[in-house]
Figure 1 (cartoon, rainbow, N blue to C red):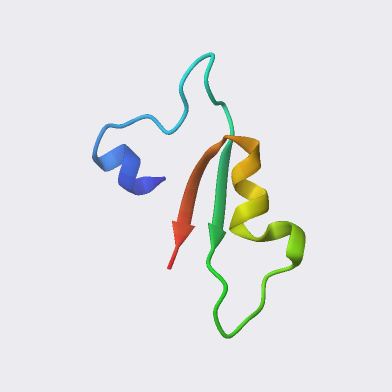
Figure 2: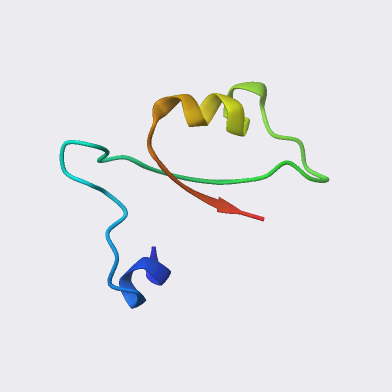
Length: 51
């Protein structure tokens, strides 16, 4: 979110998305099934993904 502020960009768009999901990809530490990217992406929200 700080990066969006520095770039002066909005992460939400009125009447399109008002939700931001901050998550990470699965690596050594597993992610619960319902929190995997394929499930979270169904929300059609803005996603900030940590690699």
